[in-house]
Structure formats: C-alpha cells, structure tokens
Image (cartoon, rainbow, N blue to C red):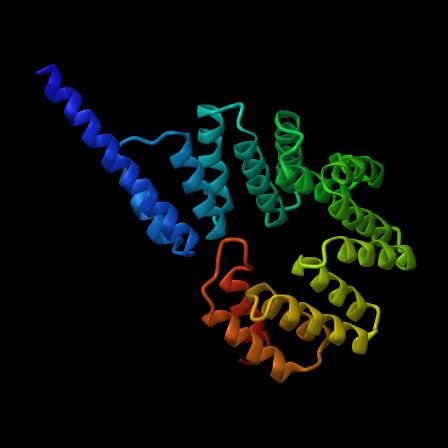
Length: 281
C-alpha cells in the first residue's frame, strides 16, 4: 500500500511538472489563454504556478486578477523578490486604469511592493528599474520624486554602468535639460553598442526634438545591429504615428510586427493593433 502511494506521488509529480513546462512554453509563445487553461487545471497550485498565472493575467490586461493571484504567490513564498515586483507591477497598472478615488491607494501599494522587492534583493534589476520608474513618474504625495530617483540611479550605475547612464538620461530629460539628456543617452549607447533598445530610445528622443534626419539614421543603425527585431519594428512605427509622418511605412511595419513570433518582452499585439486601427490599417 505504501509503495503504491509512493509510486502515485512520483507519477503525479511527473505529470505536474510536465503540465507546468507546457504552460511555460505556451506563455513564452504568447498564448496566455492556453497557458492559463493548463494552469487552472492543475490539482495543486504552489508559488510557481501562481507566479505564471499572474504573468498570464498581466499580459492579458486583467491586472486585478493578476494582483489577486500574485498575493497568493507572495503568501506562499514571501522572500521572493520577483513575486513582490510583479505584484507591484500589477497594482501599478491597476492604478493607471482606476478612478481618481482608488488610483492613489493602488499606486501606493505598487510602490510598497517595488520597495520590498528591492529590499529583498538589491540586485534584482527589474525591481530596481521598476522602482526607479515609479520614483521618476509619481508625485511626491504618492512617494515619488526626482531626489529619490537620483539616489536610485547611483545604485543602478553600480549594478551596470551603461544602465546608470540611461537612468541619468531619464532624470536630465525630466529636468528638461535636453543637452545633458542627449549626452548621457549617447554615452549609454556607446557603453552597450549592441543593446538595440537604447539605440531605439535615442532615435525616439531625436524625433521628439525635431531632428528627423538624425532619428532616421539612428533607426538604421539599430536595424543593422539587429535586423528584423520585433521591438524595432514596433517602436519605429510608433514614432512615425506619434509624429504623424511616414504613415504608410508605419502601417507596413505594424503589419510585419503582427506576423512576428513575439515574446512576453515585446509590446503586446493589442498595442500594435490599436496603432494600426488608429491609422486606418
């Protein structure tokens, strides 16, 4: 009898692990509904399952459900910095879409979880970056502020010199010191010349400053670094749409983007579809 129970436990563990692996693959293939279907069918749910469920809900835009599930993940593993950070992200996105009455409380919860995530693991780059963005964007009465962002930027520089320069760029841009902002961003690009996101950010910055030819040249540099990069397609199209120029090219880029095999790190397909619809594509 005992041997039978032991064998049953081993079989259950193998099946459970296989199902979780399947759910992970579906998630990385951006089939969030399919991943959730696998996860909700599991008879037992631990922290790892709640974590993946929360990511799926988040990517589907159901931020309330994501925060609820991540509360379970944090309760199951309270020392996990990643879970705390995703819980903060979920509350942050809820705050962005909430009424003026509930948004401040949700934003404060987001900050608290970001801060706890960094306290649990000061080297968690995602958590540090998310807290930096919060301090940069949120007003003082919600715990934000450029002074806090500047202090955290120093820590970012200690973790990664190129990212520290990017953080200094963001602070200078917020102070409307565009000369210093450009200098810091260019230094960040030089420090990590293969990081296409920073090259794209420079192209977008130049476009916002009305320096269209330089912006186009910078987009071309990014394309040479990583040809057919999905994020490059999206952000180039977004830049054109925001500026109201090259709209035929923007539609073509968005259509190409929608045919790409995307990852959870890429902008959601729904965002590309909204931009395309906006331009009559």
